[in-house]
Image 1 (cartoon, rainbow, N blue to C red):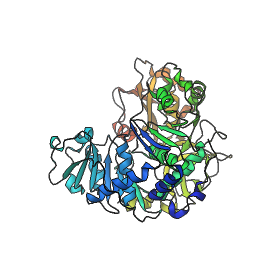
Image 2 (image 1 turned 90 degrees about the vertical axis):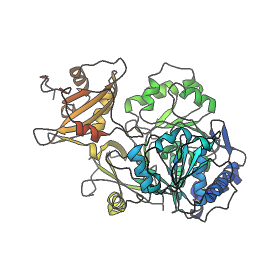
Image 3 (image 1 turned 180 degrees about the horizontal axis):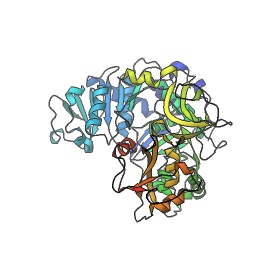
Image 4 (image 1 turned 90 degrees about the horizontal axis):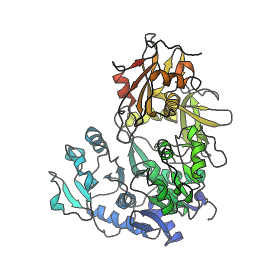
Length: 537
């Protein structure tokens, strides 16, 4: 291993575009492995040629600079090939969540105006019922090396072709760091998805800031099971590219194979999300939990009480952080600043404010909305594609309004409190649904909990919890309330509890609380007041 690289010095501002990043690192690292996915392996030297040939195939299909190209594809090498090919050509990739269907998929294609869509063969049924012509799609590439195009459905007015084997390489487009690289659509938990406009330089800075937080070094093996259609895994690729490491991409997250795959890949760094850690801890102990070489994991949103036990079992430090698709890796903990339950401190290169409803700064210790701004040009997203009014709303007063409610303490650590839309006002007190959910989810019988407001007779809110129990799990609502006492303020303990078989979710798995709020109480809802329970104050 070597020391971390001074990326801003190694890459002057004008070179912070994908073709230049690929070419410079190919010259520097040559035959070293850059990307591994299943049986497919690329070296640093391979990457520019792969991008240039895919760009040539796109050009032959009528795609030009600025055109949008949609991707509906699971984790496989063709995904990254097309992503880089678009970047080389100067076209704009539009990765789509593979679970998108119906209205959501139609909306994404309509807004992006994608002229070509590359679809994994097994996902072709997702296009049924979609008006591709009205959305602007003119070509479909089907990703399947054994494909006979005669066997696939017909799409009136659309050219259907198999995945191009190898195009003729072309020279890269003349690009600037502010040029649009990709459009990543948000989950749409409160309304239609918004397409986040991500410039080339944003991913240079993702690699810089996340790499610095994790201590990524030349020779590191960065192992991810997260989907390439999200920022996290794309960021991982650029960390490998710019720091001289190797990205290993799994098809999907597997609880049963997670540890053995880390061992097999020789991983030194990995990436997990909050729900993945308790799932891994629920499995019996395995020798592979300590046989791997991983030293740290980027682990945003992991509940505080899981950190110590996970590190004891695996030897992996969990580093929290904050980075929205619109922003960058702006807040985080490092090996030296780790504080479970805190997202971390602000990274050098960004400004942050915690503000009230009128954007006035609040003192440390008071909860408010997190506002962000970057010091480096094009380190953050440029707005929402085709939605100027949403762009103005989110970037009003020249600050990115994250919609997240946080607290900054006197030492500069940020604590996540809630999404602004999920805050509950009860008896004059603000209740964090996130904090209540953390406590409820720590009960051994609870699989997942969603907390949301329902109308109160007192013109404010009452706290309600929708709970899914673990398989075989049992708990009485009254016992669950007693479990919360001492862990939550009395006013934050749910008055209403309802057990459900599942929760409404977006295509990316996020809980759609607005649907729960719309459903409200039912005949199956348990009421603390009617049960005659008095809470300790």
